[in-house]
Length: 78
Image 1 (cartoon, rainbow, N blue to C red):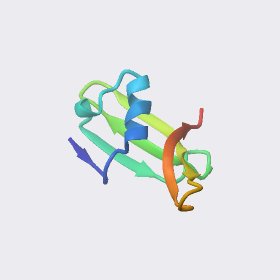
Image 2 (cartoon, one colour):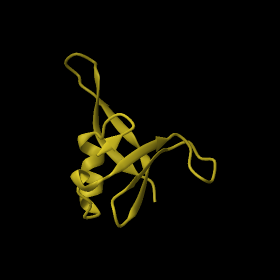
Image 3 (cartoon, rainbow, N blue to C red):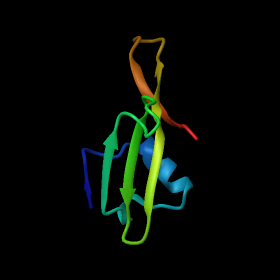
């Protein structure tokens, strides 16, 4: 399997919700704008049988202790 960079755990969870195992992906690319011109993260991936497109954005939360932002989940845009 080859990826543009890496697939985060939150994105892997979104694939899993769609019954897609990231180990079965042959390739995955990322775009930063969808087909309608909206600025979202768009992930295009395929297995040997299917094509998958997930668009949305990473949601970050700030911890009160050290005021650092950490990625907490991937919010899917339908």
